[in-house]
Length: 95
Image (cartoon, rainbow, N blue to C red; front, side, top):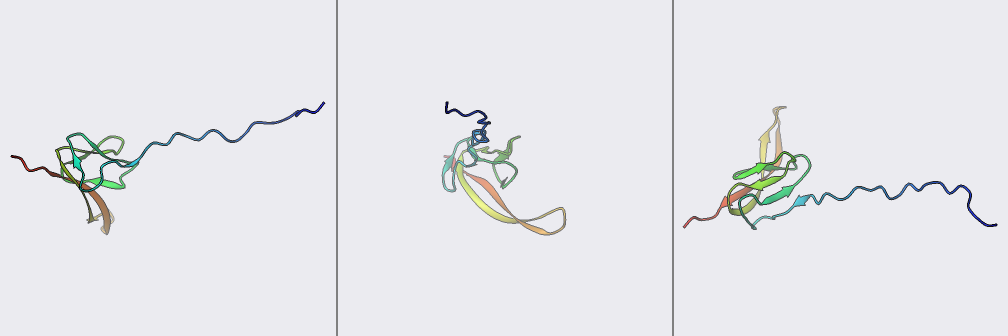
């Protein structure tokens, strides 16, 4: 009789689901109040004008307007300058 006696278990099949992180609204796009702009772990992108950071580091718009990404050097706790990426929302013209 041909059969396998001790096959053992496989090491595959235990990968976690992707979390769909990244930029959701790119620069120049219109954002409404509360729209998610960036989903991230940690602060790869920092909140700028009219943008708030949620408890899971998600950045979202506080006003309706256009999304704008900027780079700025910020002085850190060690006294040195560090380049950081900021996300801003430029408010739409009110009529």
